[in-house]
Image (cartoon, rainbow, N blue to C red; front, side, top):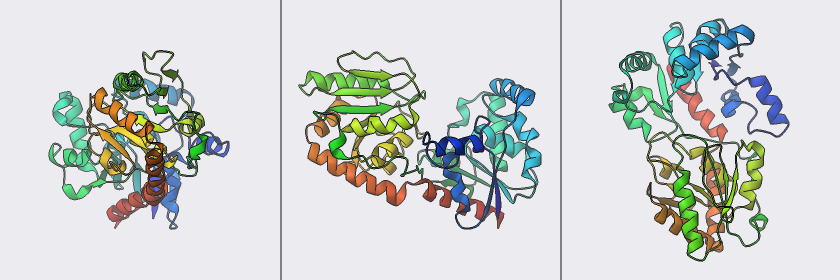
Length: 353
């Protein structure tokens, strides 16, 4: 089988490989999709546009709700010889579905929630594209019933895929590598579903309760954090995140209510690093964070519950360490990019026949 992967416009697989070789980013290819070829299948990646074409593509994309229509057309010749196309999300998945009639398309869905929340034109285009898909997948269990029911799609063509990360890039960090005092809480995230205000409020409550928690928060979003309570790393950390995970006792992720799987990657990075995770209990999070065994789940919009969970683990480092060890084992067994690619490969093989 030959599967052609249409990456988002900003991803150049050759540049990505070089950055991985320098130790800057995880996996040898975006999302670890080179693992699609682990059983001998041929995997090719769309080459990015350059120059005037890239400029035009960005301009059009910005006017089309970030859908990458230009590269779907200009890159069509690169699809020759492929048995199927694979796209990881809607940005290039929907354009591929609308421009490829000769071969089946399997697309990820990460952000389309309910059709009634979209503008009428957007809704019609999305519905047309999704119904053409040979297969659709999502890494958030909360989106599976939404796609099947609200979008009225064939249930057999909608698949849940287990998110995976590169466990070698995020090694288990030694417990003794934590900051002195063992009170550091780490978090990271830039998307609109992050609720850093609740996280900061939780850390402030922990401190007010007598535990001198220290928050290291990596985000480019605006955050108000008192200097005595922590530090905001207002940049993309990439490989430097491993240092933050090493220093931490707890990885905490506060999220607004949503079904799209926000925060899952950070949760897996924390677990892989051997740290317990405290996270908002949104739909699907329980698939990745086993409450009471690898971390603690708390209701959304509840700084008191998040504070109690953080304080519970900071005050019981032995239990926190056991959770971290269990989390690392879970990542190695279930949540690797190789396992994710194997699930995707099975879906693609199923539509190729």
